[in-house]
Image (cartoon, rainbow, N blue to C red; front, side, top):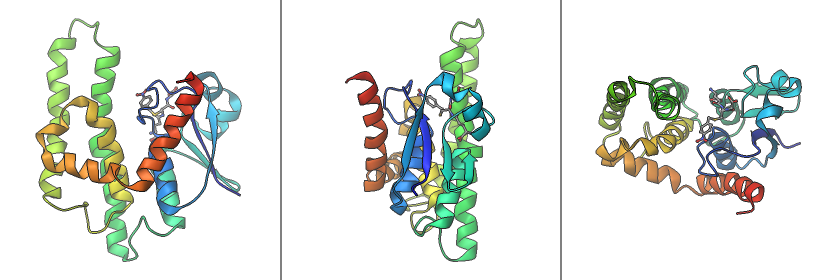
Length: 216
Ligand code: GTB
């Protein structure tokens, strides 16, 4: 049986691929695992059936036989562990690829989520204009460091891995911040990830959901 993931019935990003089902779809596409998608509304996400799968009432979730998972990082790791192609065979290289997954999720993504939250929810606060530069500065730092580490390499540590999938997934969401342009090597790295056929298939699949829902 195919695994089933959940995604927004109507994504607020209108199919721009910003929601975190995108990285799960991408991982499934990279390993060639067909999957089913259950689309959920915001109300359905908070209803008991979905809350039993996801304690925070969010997407994505992942069901494979009697295993149910939440958290995009844990889901991508599971996919990478049971299929070939996303984690190196060498034990140390594998551990390093997993470290890059954690780095993407813990050291880079939160800084950009902070920017999104500030712009979305704090614009009307009297301190917004003073705070935003601080928030942006905090996001610039890990980008500088990531750029320095990547250098002119194609991928973060040898061949493309789940670490790159997660990092590119995070940078893809960070594009709208306008902070990536300062680092041409990160822009190239991002473009290299986006050009992968599996990324393209994942993107098209999530866009098709929006197109069907909106009639666009
Ligand atoms: N840490 C979790 C993970 O990595 O899986 C975070 C999951 C999460 O944030 N899910 C969001 C969600 O379900 C969707 S991805 N939100 C609904 C809710 O909390 O009620 C975050 C997201 C949502 C929308 C946009 N957008 O429209 O641009 C971008 C990103």
